[in-house]
Length: 355
Image (tube, rainbow, N blue to C red):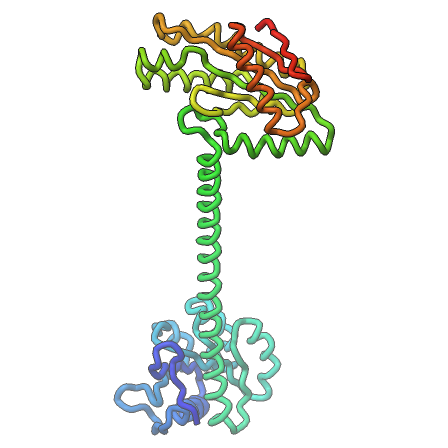
């Protein structure tokens, strides 16, 4: 017969037997002892634990037991001073993980289903085959307990793993967002950088094609910026670029994409903007620049602004690159004329606009 050992530590578990009838208690101890590959005489030896069992013959005695000492319990369905269901409830309340096997006669089998519902792992009817049925029931109860523990451990581990995975995903998403922000942002001005602008321009151009939407573009250059850098130093030049970035972010529409094109050149992509809306944004930028440049503490350093306006429906651009080129040509025409705002029209025509 397979030895009955604790499934976790490998040590033979101590069995609590709650039975008022000495003959039945002797039968249960003998059955347990036989499963330990050795029989034990009755009554107990000096350790008072025959066959590794502790026998309790009353409820009052049970209340004095330290239930943590036991690996399983055999409980009589009927006690001299109480009912086995009361014992079961007591054990379940104080030691919910202790496996309990209830035993009784055929006459007591009517409470078997109630015992199982109350938490008993098994109900064994005493039929004279206890050498087989009792060890098997106890061993089964102990294994079931370990399976429950393993399942609870797995559930806890899974819960922790899911929580850790959720936290890792949150951090990953946050990192991705930060990387995307870094990838599309100009470090100095905080505006969209040129690489991301080109990507966005391609997307908006395709959208304009699909839905016949209007699309405008502004190219902006700072006049006299090189002289300012040479006179006041690059740190003041960087400060001016940052201020221009703030000015564009505050002046453009929410849907617009202001970007640093390179050096002291900036631009604005204007989705869903008709010609008048595109010109209006350019005029607001020029007016805002004139209103604040004197407050930047640049002294006598000259600083101006030139803006080229291109619109897909007016300049006749056939591609995103051509739309940018049209705005660039208009910007240089404005710079050459000494005015601030110039519109590039179809057929290389230029129209000077009052800012």
